[in-house]
Image (tube, rainbow, N blue to C red; front, side):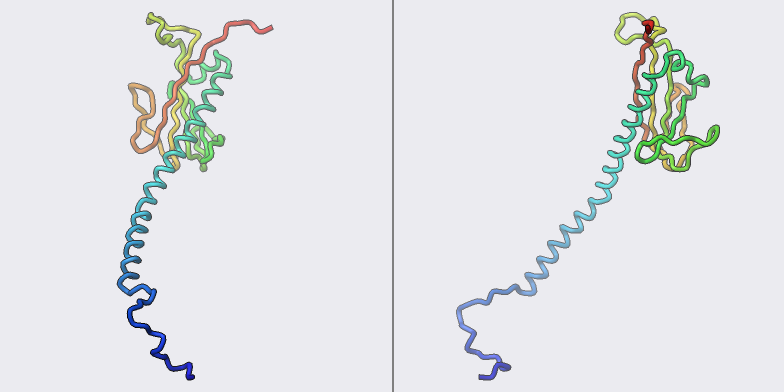
Length: 184
């Protein structure tokens, strides 16, 4: 028996061979390509949403750290911390680690987040029923801006807060009270 020649004996009429036709393969590849392109189109949106979530998470951690620092500070130093009324600036890297500025008005090169603290002394007590201010209560407002280009952030003169649509700015507020008790 010659093996090099195909034999007709293996073909049985009425039985189909198990194989895909060229049309079926092309259709399957087309369906998979369409689905794959749809998934690839969603990647930029997913990455953008992920970046916004990371900025919000790191920004809230920075604000919590700044507010904790304000709560641990001596009350008289806290209310006199910002003599200019423009706020105290602190700078943080992409992981929320604080960076130190090298000179007056200098911004560290690796600063991604800018945190601004504005303290208002003698705050009106919420829901107290009166409009008199309490000298033992201060309002601490912390704004955290995502500013990787270290650009100047515009400020609203009426509210004395950052207001610039170019940046993602988170604003937090806390009340800090003065403890009048005498320590032994």
